[in-house]
Length: 336
Ligand code: AQP
Image 1: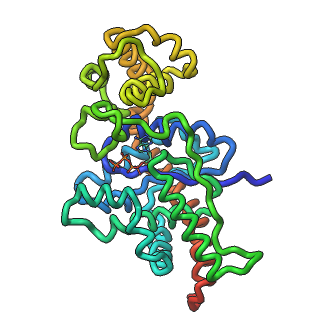
Image 2: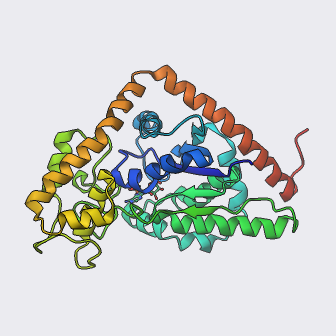
Image 3: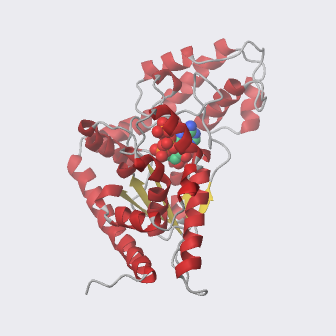
């Protein structure tokens, strides 16, 4: 039986943080053996907000190396760079012409990011979800493992695919496969260390809000020491009045590998003075093997280049076949 296909990606826009890891990459690693996987570094998405051209290539390599360091297994997964596969840009154009503008204008992430950009919002930022739809649909993905913040974009992807199938497909021969999101409850929304009501984010101007996967132990210690807490005695999950407490306990649970019940019992009588060093040690221990592996990979640039070359070639084959199918359905003259 052929395995179902998985597609997902992260933008090389800065440091990969615990939100990206616990909300997305850790889940990729956990499920990868059951699927045929394509994991891309979505560099075309990274330029939808003003970017540093000098840093883009290095950030892209760092992200690819982190995928490997976190445990992506090349036996069942392909790692590639989005811009190396031209079909992503071409399918985006085709989908653009089928997608109503008002579908994009109501995207929450666009509204939030546009607000941060002020007046200088690029067309690319509005178009971000269509590019994401192209990423997913090109690979006939069955499942897309993402964090909670990407749920609306996944729904849009499904709507675009359904629209193409309705307009241009035959009943028994849909043009595009309709993908399903795969959102795990725990870790789906890791919150900022400085505000438990905001998601942990790469674009937060304050470094104190996030723990990056490559943060040295001293930085992790400092960030947890300074993180926002509350004056209530004892620690408990799921109290809507205590978003920071819930977030920090969840981080401890996911990084320690303990169950929610074990953590609830262990921490119920603790104060922050005891809990913070425990979380610090747990985070440092969880990230140490990833950081060591990352360094090994970065020290072997030829290996990393070859992983990305092979990944792009495999991705190209699958993506070009889908692109040809879509162009055919839309009525383009074939280039013989
Ligand atoms: N705080 C989070 N909790 C859980 N999952 C998260 N993800 C992002 N933040 C959290 C998931 O990480 C994957 C890759 O995200 P991305 O690179 O597309 O960036 P993003 O979703 O825009 O979030 P970032 O990393 O914080 O960047 P900015 O600051 O630009 O918004 C996705 O699966 C996402 O759900």
